[in-house]
Image (cartoon, rainbow, N blue to C red; front, side, top):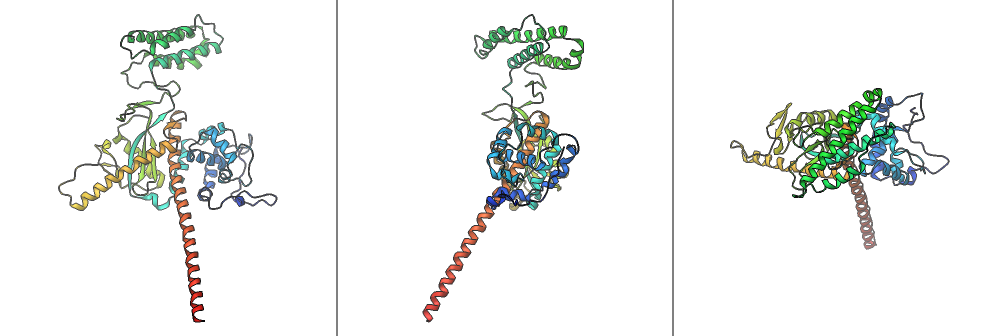
Length: 451
């Protein structure tokens, strides 16, 4: 049940008001006054019941916790704890008095993300773009792709087979089925044998161990199919058994391989890096303005597409997020083959044309050199805003994590600009005060001389 929230801040008559005890010039408090919280209240109210259920947490509190989580690169558990300890976090989320208890359980953030979905996070991202005003409406943008790695272990056939065996044994125990064998000790010996897969003299032994693991998993699947009740088998577990058989039958050279049992949508991406040959996650496209470095587009791709084939999606997302079409997009050589997409000119690094004059050549060179500014943006998204490893589940988790990281980047730029402006005005006031004092001293000396 959603309880009504007052949009206006009222001072407390019987106790110390929280905002009166904090620094009013803090950038986080200034950001809180710029964010249109009422828009989120109106957009997310449809996800709650007005009459039934326990009273829900305020929408501003939940949205504020999500923003603080990405801004400070914290987990769900840590951001809830830091909110309790930090009065500026509480004021940012709309509290008028200091709270000594946790705002919510960390799992409520998971439920809230699932409740608002991708559309709700898109609204948060559009808010972060609109916060910059005309600076986000540049006609030229820089576009690049990167990999958002999923929080999975390095995939091998032996790991997948062992996980399948453990799941099947757990299922048999849950259903009360007395198995002929659980193969626990044999699986342990096979695991030790597979560790020598790269040894030239023990490679055959490792291959036999992997084959044995697949055989054990197949035996357990057939046994459970025979002994499980037919109703439970076809309604609950038949889909899982077919999935396990597909994983056990896949070969190293197959297409559309499964790399994780709990994240089957993960695919393998080779970006040509020397230190990391393959990455496991999903490809994402990032678009930033050419001058202001404001992220105006972020798209998560469910398939491993060629960079040139990702342009229609990212250009459409830019138009939706800021309401203005892109005239020119600067990309790297990985986008070769595309010159114009949906009316947008694609600029790629290439030798100058003979018909170009000196001004045109220098302009293209500066434009392509400026494209490199998106590389450190991607680096900051990964190191500072939780894009390096995605802990959210499923395809929707990929989209939510990317959009929240991009929104956090835009908010961080606003905070830095607000902090710089505050320092500038403070220095200006000091200079004016000193200048006024020097004028007063000069007038005093002149009056003494006349007297």
